[in-house]
Image (cartoon, rainbow, N blue to C red; front, side):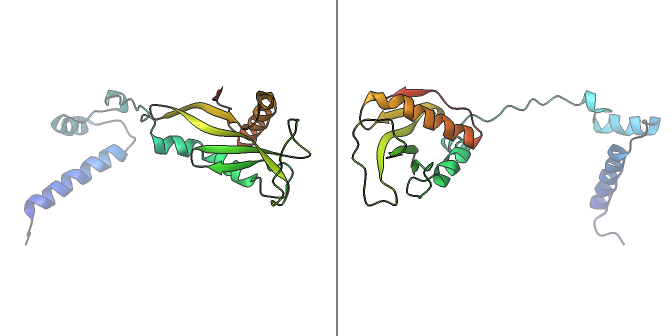
Length: 172
């Protein structure tokens, strides 16, 4: 006794179509008639081409794009004893520090309480255009002669993270 005859019939038809699609042999006349009734394409070329467009950038996707860089910033945190560790993460970017043996020059007030004496050189924030990160806004802590040193350290950071450096803009 069939309790759901319509459901059984639909299942059998769907099973037949699944078998048809899985088969790699050329279509028989019976298959072509079955396809004509369902209006399914005979080959993949007859299927409509669906062009996939990437979703527009969002604040979340852009922060994810910067994740490898921020991981490297955390790895090279300025509070560590490593002499190459000159960075500190902030909410939308990072800070660049120097220490007494690796600095751009000039008189500095180094923080004596840290593991190694460090001084702030620049603060880097993401430059946003709509919801996309398009560059780096650089705010220097002391003078403009620090630009070259800071840019070289930032470029090394991007290279270590496996990313291309974004354009930078000096912000007062």
